[in-house]
Amino acid sequence: MQLYTIIVSLFVFVATAHPFEPRPNTIRVLMVNDQIYTAVRADIPADGSKISIQGAFAGLCARDGNLFANRAEILMGTTGSCRVFNDSDCTSQIGGPLNANGDSVGFTSGKKGSINLVKAFIVCRL
Image 1 (cartoon, rainbow, N blue to C red):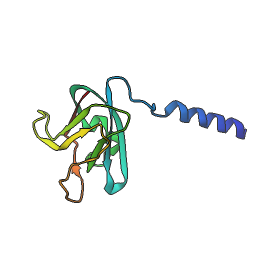
Image 2: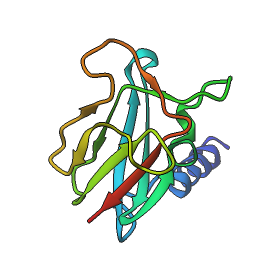
Image 3: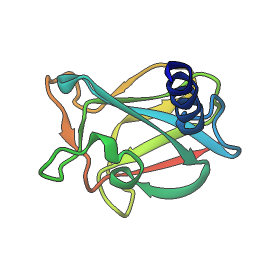
Image 4: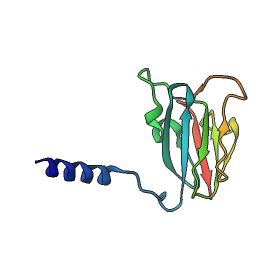
């Protein structure tokens, strides 16, 4: 019985794990809220389309529906760049561009805390 439980548990883990490599034509982005020690990664299409932060990084949402983060980065092994915008027209950029060099980009301009990204968008290009 124990062997069966171990095998089933291992199968569930492997079946639900994120792929090691990002999907083709996407950029793997990590969004972080250091205040609550939470990080969520997502594969964002790298075709220049605007993607809702709330939809892509729903795991950062609080119970009240807000989504706070203080930094983001492109994970190693991916190329391209991304920009985070505070509006649906993608004219008000938050922080600097995310580049594939592995550096984190802060959203709070050196201030402590996080900002609400529930209405924000991310745009990525290869």
